Length: 397
Image (cartoon, rainbow, N blue to C red; front, side):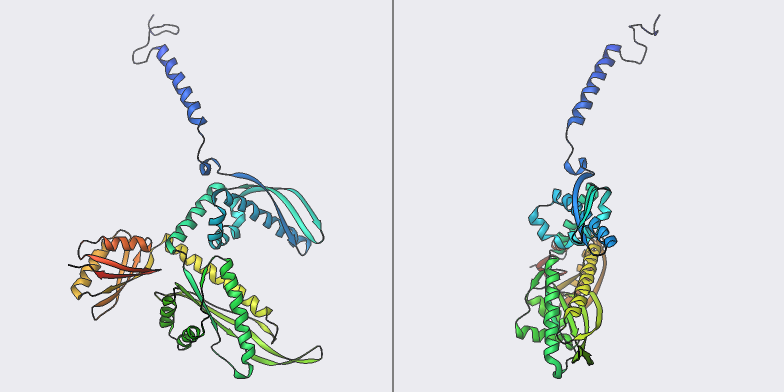
Protein backbone atom coordinates (compact mmCIF):
# COMPACT_ATOMS: atom_id res chain seq x y z
CA UNK A 1 0.00 0.00 0.00
CA UNK A 2 1.36 3.40 -0.99
CA UNK A 3 2.60 5.70 1.71
CA UNK A 4 3.00 3.08 4.48
CA UNK A 5 6.13 2.83 6.63
CA UNK A 6 8.72 0.62 4.98
CA UNK A 7 7.39 1.31 1.52
CA UNK A 8 9.99 2.37 -1.00
CA UNK A 9 7.44 4.37 -2.89
CA UNK A 10 7.66 8.02 -1.89
CA UNK A 11 4.59 9.93 -0.81
CA UNK A 12 3.43 12.72 -3.02
CA UNK A 13 5.44 15.92 -2.47
CA UNK A 14 8.36 14.20 -0.65
CA UNK A 15 11.79 13.27 -2.13
CA UNK A 16 12.80 9.61 -2.33
CA UNK A 17 14.42 8.17 0.82
CA UNK A 18 17.81 7.72 -0.86
CA UNK A 19 17.76 11.45 -1.76
CA UNK A 20 17.06 12.32 1.88
CA UNK A 21 20.04 10.23 2.98
CA UNK A 22 22.21 12.08 0.46
CA UNK A 23 21.00 15.49 1.70
CA UNK A 24 21.63 14.45 5.30
CA UNK A 25 25.19 13.35 4.43
CA UNK A 26 25.88 16.66 2.67
CA UNK A 27 24.46 18.67 5.58
CA UNK A 28 26.56 16.70 8.07
CA UNK A 29 29.72 17.25 6.03
CA UNK A 30 28.98 20.97 5.72
CA UNK A 31 28.45 21.19 9.50
CA UNK A 32 31.93 19.82 10.21
CA UNK A 33 33.53 21.90 7.47
CA UNK A 34 31.96 25.14 8.74
CA UNK A 35 32.72 24.56 12.39
CA UNK A 36 36.25 23.36 11.66
CA UNK A 37 37.14 26.78 10.19
CA UNK A 38 38.75 28.94 12.90
CA UNK A 39 36.97 32.21 13.65
CA UNK A 40 38.82 35.54 13.62
CA UNK A 41 40.67 36.08 16.88
CA UNK A 42 38.45 38.90 18.08
CA UNK A 43 35.28 36.89 17.46
CA UNK A 44 36.57 33.61 18.82
CA UNK A 45 38.09 35.09 21.97
CA UNK A 46 35.03 36.92 23.31
CA UNK A 47 36.60 36.15 26.71
CA UNK A 48 40.16 35.12 27.48
CA UNK A 49 41.50 33.51 30.64
CA UNK A 50 44.76 35.04 31.90
CA UNK A 51 46.85 34.80 35.07
CA UNK A 52 48.27 37.98 36.61
CA UNK A 53 50.00 39.05 39.81
CA UNK A 54 49.44 42.39 41.55
CA UNK A 55 51.19 44.23 44.39
CA UNK A 56 49.92 46.67 47.01
CA UNK A 57 51.34 48.50 50.02
CA UNK A 58 50.10 50.36 53.08
CA UNK A 59 47.50 49.22 55.60
CA UNK A 60 46.67 45.48 55.28
CA UNK A 61 43.06 45.92 54.11
CA UNK A 62 43.92 48.69 51.65
CA UNK A 63 47.06 46.87 50.52
CA UNK A 64 45.04 43.78 49.58
CA UNK A 65 42.51 45.85 47.61
CA UNK A 66 45.36 47.68 45.87
CA UNK A 67 47.04 44.37 44.98
CA UNK A 68 43.80 42.98 43.51
CA UNK A 69 43.26 46.15 41.47
CA UNK A 70 46.86 45.99 40.25
CA UNK A 71 46.39 42.35 39.23
CA UNK A 72 43.16 43.19 37.37
CA UNK A 73 44.93 45.99 35.52
CA UNK A 74 47.76 43.65 34.53
CA UNK A 75 45.23 41.08 33.33
CA UNK A 76 43.63 43.71 31.11
CA UNK A 77 47.09 44.81 29.92
CA UNK A 78 47.63 41.26 28.67
CA UNK A 79 44.35 41.50 26.78
CA UNK A 80 45.35 44.82 25.21
CA UNK A 81 48.69 43.31 24.19
CA UNK A 82 46.79 40.73 22.13
CA UNK A 83 45.50 43.46 19.80
CA UNK A 84 48.05 46.29 20.04
CA UNK A 85 51.75 46.34 19.13
CA UNK A 86 54.23 47.72 21.67
CA UNK A 87 54.92 50.71 19.39
CA UNK A 88 51.23 51.56 19.08
CA UNK A 89 50.81 51.03 22.82
CA UNK A 90 53.38 53.74 23.53
CA UNK A 91 51.81 56.13 21.02
CA UNK A 92 48.27 55.60 22.33
CA UNK A 93 49.10 55.25 26.04
CA UNK A 94 47.24 58.44 26.96
CA UNK A 95 43.87 57.20 25.71
CA UNK A 96 44.41 53.57 26.68
CA UNK A 97 45.29 54.63 30.23
CA UNK A 98 42.24 56.85 30.65
CA UNK A 99 39.66 54.77 28.79
CA UNK A 100 40.77 51.22 29.61
CA UNK A 101 43.36 50.77 32.37
CA UNK A 102 41.62 53.17 34.75
CA UNK A 103 38.44 51.09 34.28
CA UNK A 104 40.08 47.64 34.42
CA UNK A 105 37.28 46.02 36.46
CA UNK A 106 34.81 46.81 33.71
CA UNK A 107 36.75 44.64 31.27
CA UNK A 108 36.98 41.61 33.58
CA UNK A 109 34.02 39.20 33.52
CA UNK A 110 35.13 37.36 36.66
CA UNK A 111 38.27 36.53 38.57
CA UNK A 112 39.51 34.00 41.11
CA UNK A 113 42.30 34.52 43.66
CA UNK A 114 44.83 31.73 43.24
CA UNK A 115 47.30 32.82 45.89
CA UNK A 116 47.98 35.74 48.23
CA UNK A 117 50.77 36.58 50.64
CA UNK A 118 52.38 39.46 52.50
CA UNK A 119 56.11 40.06 52.73
CA UNK A 120 57.96 43.12 54.09
CA UNK A 121 54.77 45.19 54.15
CA UNK A 122 53.93 44.42 50.49
CA UNK A 123 50.78 42.44 49.68
CA UNK A 124 50.93 40.13 46.67
CA UNK A 125 47.85 38.63 45.00
CA UNK A 126 47.83 36.16 42.11
CA UNK A 127 44.56 35.90 40.19
CA UNK A 128 43.00 34.01 37.30
CA UNK A 129 40.80 36.43 35.37
CA UNK A 130 38.41 36.17 32.45
CA UNK A 131 39.01 39.26 30.29
CA UNK A 132 36.17 40.50 28.05
CA UNK A 133 38.12 40.52 24.79
CA UNK A 134 35.21 41.58 22.57
CA UNK A 135 34.54 44.69 24.67
CA UNK A 136 38.26 45.41 24.82
CA UNK A 137 38.54 45.21 21.04
CA UNK A 138 35.56 47.55 20.65
CA UNK A 139 37.08 50.13 23.00
CA UNK A 140 40.49 49.93 21.30
CA UNK A 141 38.77 50.50 17.96
CA UNK A 142 37.08 53.60 19.40
CA UNK A 143 40.47 54.87 20.64
CA UNK A 144 41.88 54.47 17.14
CA UNK A 145 39.01 56.53 15.75
CA UNK A 146 39.63 59.29 18.30
CA UNK A 147 43.35 59.45 17.51
CA UNK A 148 42.77 59.49 13.75
CA UNK A 149 40.18 62.23 14.08
CA UNK A 150 42.13 64.48 16.43
CA UNK A 151 45.47 63.79 14.70
CA UNK A 152 47.35 63.72 18.04
CA UNK A 153 47.43 67.50 18.70
CA UNK A 154 50.64 69.17 19.87
CA UNK A 155 50.56 71.10 23.14
CA UNK A 156 52.33 74.24 24.33
CA UNK A 157 52.55 74.90 28.08
CA UNK A 158 52.95 78.39 29.52
CA UNK A 159 53.42 78.73 33.30
CA UNK A 160 53.45 82.21 34.83
CA UNK A 161 52.08 84.25 37.73
CA UNK A 162 49.40 86.84 37.06
CA UNK A 163 50.07 88.43 40.44
CA UNK A 164 53.72 88.93 41.40
CA UNK A 165 55.43 90.40 44.45
CA UNK A 166 58.94 91.75 43.81
CA UNK A 167 59.85 91.07 47.45
CA UNK A 168 59.42 87.32 46.94
CA UNK A 169 60.12 87.00 43.21
CA UNK A 170 62.54 84.11 43.71
CA UNK A 171 59.89 82.10 45.58
CA UNK A 172 57.35 82.67 42.80
CA UNK A 173 59.79 81.75 40.02
CA UNK A 174 60.78 78.55 41.82
CA UNK A 175 57.09 77.69 42.18
CA UNK A 176 56.55 78.29 38.45
CA UNK A 177 59.44 76.00 37.52
CA UNK A 178 58.18 73.28 39.85
CA UNK A 179 54.64 73.40 38.40
CA UNK A 180 55.94 73.50 34.83
CA UNK A 181 58.08 70.40 35.38
CA UNK A 182 55.19 68.52 37.00
CA UNK A 183 52.71 69.54 34.31
CA UNK A 184 54.98 68.63 31.39
CA UNK A 185 55.92 65.34 33.06
CA UNK A 186 52.25 64.29 33.33
CA UNK A 187 51.41 65.40 29.79
CA UNK A 188 54.34 63.40 28.40
CA UNK A 189 53.33 60.36 30.44
CA UNK A 190 49.84 60.63 28.96
CA UNK A 191 51.26 60.67 25.43
CA UNK A 192 50.85 64.35 24.53
CA UNK A 193 53.38 65.86 22.13
CA UNK A 194 54.85 69.07 23.56
CA UNK A 195 55.95 72.19 21.68
CA UNK A 196 58.77 74.02 23.46
CA UNK A 197 57.83 77.49 24.68
CA UNK A 198 61.10 78.09 26.52
CA UNK A 199 62.33 80.84 24.20
CA UNK A 200 62.32 83.94 26.44
CA UNK A 201 60.91 86.41 23.91
CA UNK A 202 58.13 84.01 22.93
CA UNK A 203 57.22 83.33 26.56
CA UNK A 204 57.06 87.05 27.39
CA UNK A 205 54.86 87.74 24.38
CA UNK A 206 52.45 84.92 25.24
CA UNK A 207 52.35 85.93 28.90
CA UNK A 208 51.68 89.59 28.02
CA UNK A 209 48.75 88.64 25.79
CA UNK A 210 47.24 86.37 28.47
CA UNK A 211 47.74 88.96 31.21
CA UNK A 212 45.96 91.47 28.96
CA UNK A 213 43.04 89.01 28.76
CA UNK A 214 43.60 88.44 25.06
CA UNK A 215 43.51 84.64 24.81
CA UNK A 216 42.61 84.67 21.10
CA UNK A 217 45.85 86.40 20.10
CA UNK A 218 47.86 84.26 22.53
CA UNK A 219 46.32 81.14 21.00
CA UNK A 220 47.07 82.45 17.50
CA UNK A 221 50.72 83.01 18.46
CA UNK A 222 50.98 79.49 19.91
CA UNK A 223 49.44 78.19 16.66
CA UNK A 224 52.19 79.94 14.65
CA UNK A 225 54.74 77.93 16.63
CA UNK A 226 53.02 74.64 15.73
CA UNK A 227 50.75 74.05 18.75
CA UNK A 228 47.10 72.98 18.45
CA UNK A 229 46.44 73.32 22.19
CA UNK A 230 47.71 76.05 24.54
CA UNK A 231 47.75 75.34 28.28
CA UNK A 232 48.06 78.32 30.61
CA UNK A 233 49.06 77.65 34.21
CA UNK A 234 48.69 80.58 36.62
CA UNK A 235 50.73 79.73 39.73
CA UNK A 236 50.43 81.78 42.92
CA UNK A 237 52.80 81.55 45.86
CA UNK A 238 51.60 84.55 47.86
CA UNK A 239 53.14 85.39 51.23
CA UNK A 240 50.86 84.39 54.14
CA UNK A 241 52.79 84.90 57.37
CA UNK A 242 55.83 83.89 59.41
CA UNK A 243 55.66 80.86 61.68
CA UNK A 244 57.95 79.14 64.15
CA UNK A 245 59.15 75.74 62.94
CA UNK A 246 61.53 73.85 65.24
CA UNK A 247 62.34 77.11 66.95
CA UNK A 248 63.17 78.92 63.72
CA UNK A 249 61.13 81.61 61.97
CA UNK A 250 59.89 80.52 58.54
CA UNK A 251 57.90 82.34 55.87
CA UNK A 252 54.84 80.52 54.56
CA UNK A 253 53.36 80.89 51.06
CA UNK A 254 50.14 79.76 49.38
CA UNK A 255 50.05 76.84 46.91
CA UNK A 256 47.51 77.78 44.24
CA UNK A 257 47.24 76.93 40.58
CA UNK A 258 44.70 77.68 37.87
CA UNK A 259 44.82 75.72 34.60
CA UNK A 260 43.18 76.62 31.32
CA UNK A 261 43.43 74.69 28.04
CA UNK A 262 42.25 76.12 24.73
CA UNK A 263 42.39 75.25 21.05
CA UNK A 264 44.81 77.55 19.25
CA UNK A 265 42.86 77.83 16.00
CA UNK A 266 39.46 78.69 17.50
CA UNK A 267 40.41 79.81 21.07
CA UNK A 268 37.72 77.39 22.29
CA UNK A 269 38.22 76.56 25.99
CA UNK A 270 38.63 72.82 26.54
CA UNK A 271 39.18 73.01 30.29
CA UNK A 272 39.35 75.53 33.13
CA UNK A 273 40.01 74.60 36.74
CA UNK A 274 41.49 75.77 40.04
CA UNK A 275 42.97 73.97 43.04
CA UNK A 276 45.02 74.79 46.13
CA UNK A 277 46.62 73.20 49.17
CA UNK A 278 47.48 74.74 52.57
CA UNK A 279 50.40 77.16 52.76
CA UNK A 280 53.92 75.79 53.08
CA UNK A 281 57.46 77.05 53.56
CA UNK A 282 59.32 78.80 50.75
CA UNK A 283 61.41 75.71 49.95
CA UNK A 284 58.58 73.21 50.46
CA UNK A 285 57.28 72.64 46.93
CA UNK A 286 55.63 69.24 47.40
CA UNK A 287 52.12 70.66 48.09
CA UNK A 288 52.32 72.74 44.90
CA UNK A 289 53.48 69.71 42.91
CA UNK A 290 50.61 67.65 44.34
CA UNK A 291 47.92 70.18 43.48
CA UNK A 292 49.44 70.69 40.00
CA UNK A 293 49.39 66.93 39.41
CA UNK A 294 45.81 66.59 40.60
CA UNK A 295 44.58 69.40 38.36
CA UNK A 296 46.59 68.15 35.38
CA UNK A 297 44.97 64.70 35.64
CA UNK A 298 41.54 66.33 35.80
CA UNK A 299 42.37 68.46 32.76
CA UNK A 300 43.53 65.47 30.69
CA UNK A 301 40.32 63.59 31.51
CA UNK A 302 38.23 66.61 30.45
CA UNK A 303 40.11 66.93 27.16
CA UNK A 304 39.67 63.21 26.41
CA UNK A 305 35.95 63.44 27.14
CA UNK A 306 35.70 66.38 24.75
CA UNK A 307 37.58 64.44 22.06
CA UNK A 308 35.25 61.47 22.54
CA UNK A 309 32.23 63.73 22.04
CA UNK A 310 33.82 65.10 18.88
CA UNK A 311 34.08 61.55 17.53
CA UNK A 312 30.59 60.30 18.36
CA UNK A 313 28.69 63.58 18.13
CA UNK A 314 28.85 66.61 15.85
CA UNK A 315 32.01 68.66 16.33
CA UNK A 316 32.48 72.38 15.72
CA UNK A 317 34.81 73.48 12.93
CA UNK A 318 35.82 76.89 11.63
CA UNK A 319 35.98 77.61 7.90
CA UNK A 320 37.96 80.70 6.85
CA UNK A 321 36.92 81.89 3.38
CA UNK A 322 39.07 84.32 1.37
CA UNK A 323 38.44 86.43 -1.75
CA UNK A 324 34.67 85.95 -1.90
CA UNK A 325 31.63 88.15 -2.47
CA UNK A 326 28.41 88.19 -0.46
CA UNK A 327 26.74 86.22 -3.28
CA UNK A 328 29.54 83.64 -3.09
CA UNK A 329 29.06 83.40 0.69
CA UNK A 330 25.37 82.56 0.33
CA UNK A 331 26.07 80.00 -2.40
CA UNK A 332 28.81 78.37 -0.30
CA UNK A 333 26.51 78.16 2.73
CA UNK A 334 23.81 76.51 0.60
CA UNK A 335 26.32 74.03 -0.79
CA UNK A 336 27.63 73.14 2.68
CA UNK A 337 24.10 72.40 3.90
CA UNK A 338 23.90 69.59 1.34
CA UNK A 339 26.94 67.79 2.77
CA UNK A 340 26.22 64.58 4.65
CA UNK A 341 26.78 65.09 8.39
CA UNK A 342 26.41 68.87 8.24
CA UNK A 343 24.50 70.53 11.06
CA UNK A 344 24.27 74.21 11.92
CA UNK A 345 26.13 76.82 9.86
CA UNK A 346 26.75 80.26 11.34
CA UNK A 347 28.45 83.25 9.75
CA UNK A 348 30.72 84.71 12.42
CA UNK A 349 32.06 87.56 10.30
CA UNK A 350 32.18 88.89 6.73
CA UNK A 351 34.28 91.88 5.75
CA UNK A 352 36.76 92.85 3.07
CA UNK A 353 35.99 89.78 0.99
CA UNK A 354 36.80 87.39 3.85
CA UNK A 355 34.35 85.38 5.95
CA UNK A 356 34.48 83.10 8.97
CA UNK A 357 31.93 80.28 9.17
CA UNK A 358 31.37 78.10 12.23
CA UNK A 359 29.83 74.75 11.35
CA UNK A 360 28.64 71.72 13.28
CA UNK A 361 29.72 68.58 11.42
CA UNK A 362 29.60 64.83 12.10
CA UNK A 363 32.96 63.52 10.89
CA UNK A 364 36.65 64.34 10.82
CA UNK A 365 38.21 67.55 9.56
CA UNK A 366 39.49 65.60 6.54
CA UNK A 367 35.93 64.43 5.79
CA UNK A 368 34.76 68.05 5.88
CA UNK A 369 37.66 69.21 3.69
CA UNK A 370 36.85 66.49 1.15
CA UNK A 371 33.23 67.61 1.13
CA UNK A 372 34.20 71.25 0.58
CA UNK A 373 36.58 70.32 -2.26
CA UNK A 374 33.79 68.30 -3.88
CA UNK A 375 31.27 71.16 -4.06
CA UNK A 376 30.34 71.83 -7.68
CA UNK A 377 29.04 75.39 -7.36
CA UNK A 378 30.87 77.48 -6.42
CA UNK A 379 34.05 75.47 -6.89
CA UNK A 380 36.31 75.80 -3.83
CA UNK A 381 39.96 75.05 -3.11
CA UNK A 382 41.15 73.98 0.36
CA UNK A 383 44.47 75.74 1.06
CA UNK A 384 45.12 74.74 4.66
CA UNK A 385 44.08 72.50 7.58
CA UNK A 386 44.87 72.74 11.28
CA UNK A 387 43.11 70.89 14.11
CA UNK A 388 39.62 72.45 13.80
CA UNK A 389 40.13 75.09 11.11
CA UNK A 390 39.99 74.90 7.31
CA UNK A 391 41.37 77.62 5.01
CA UNK A 392 39.39 77.92 1.76
CA UNK A 393 39.56 80.01 -1.41
CA UNK A 394 37.44 80.17 -4.56
CA UNK A 395 38.91 78.03 -7.30
CA UNK A 396 39.93 79.84 -10.49
CA UNK A 397 36.92 80.39 -12.71
